[in-house]
Image (cartoon, rainbow, N blue to C red; front, top):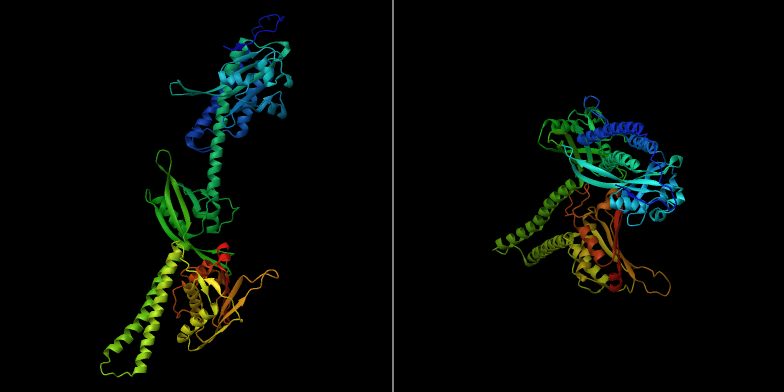
Length: 596
């Protein structure tokens, strides 16, 4: 029963209105039939998980569009106003997140600004709030005198009287028993026409109509949620870096995201949905994989396929990419196969690293074997010389070779250990000291001259070159790697020069803060497209000119890491056939290193 507001003092009790409800009952019956049809279409869409029609199925019911929902509500609003002889009609819906009641379209007798004025917080006072909180109907006989109507400001919207009922959504079981009731808002009709007022019969009629309206609104909200969920899923699929293709049991494409189009070289504007995959996909390898997946039943299919794709980031016009294509069966709610999904994962870098590591192991084995072979050979020769065939100078030469090969082994093992620590993310221990860079360079060049019979090793430093704060062993390691590299990659000989200079201060009166070391050669040079990668671990430039040159591919990665450990930077300049120059910049003082 509604909560009735007493008539104003002095007002006469109105005479009962004539019984004119037969036509209203016909309206209600028409609305009930329309609502039943709408619910059937919603239930069908939920059961089949899509929003399209199925014309070949005799039981198919097309899902209504958003426009159909709005038209159904508009017809409902119009008929409610006619049945109750009201000037205005509006649905107020509950926003759970904002804890508000807001007016929604379509409505009768309100413009958009007026609908905005009707919005209320649930905790406030007002007619809408009380109906929603108490879940009870309410008649407002005089909005000017009713304090709840005044709190809601109904008079400013030219509202004189009203009947308001809660919008309740019911969930029922197969036996039509109510399982759950949820109040989703309030339905208002305002201003009885012809100077009349709303009575109990109006309340009963409006409660019946509200059930129809609540069902339509609940269906519309459910539809919006389904559409939103579908759109979010499509956006997620489209944003995947991996390529994705879905094919139905009938062999027709259900989905292909932009990444898959790019991989297969398919124009982004070409319509593909519902096209046979064999016609949409030209690559025979992919067609075979999809065909195998469609016919394999429960089995998963996984293969690797290489594609040549345009890559603007490389100087070459094309570069090969390797994709692992994984297919799996897609099942419906009943567990029956509904099609397959194929995922394209780019594993080019993984395979590249695997190849580099394989080459690295092979190279390291060779690099270890070479000095060990020399050491073993000379030791065996000396041990077998029981008759003192070799004189003392020859023996000392053999000892010198053995000593230098041991040093070579030591450097290789030290480089391997250092690069392993860097790869594991472990900080390198820096043993800071004052380092005379000129003396360190002279020592490195003297040690390398034994391997550089065809080279001229020089150094060029200005007078009074500053002593810097650095790790002596690591500075030696940096220079040794770069000088040794310059010698190896200058197989025809030439000059290898280490040049030092003090960088000018940024403003006059300041002391210089940095030094620059330049290690240059006149060797084969490095092709421009390889320059960004030479600092990568295990990376070696592979061309006909350097395949016979030894190396592990970790020297330059170590140089870069050790230089940056000092707070410095490493750069390279190179021109094929002319030579290469490495430029290293180091802070002079450790405090600046720590700030860097």
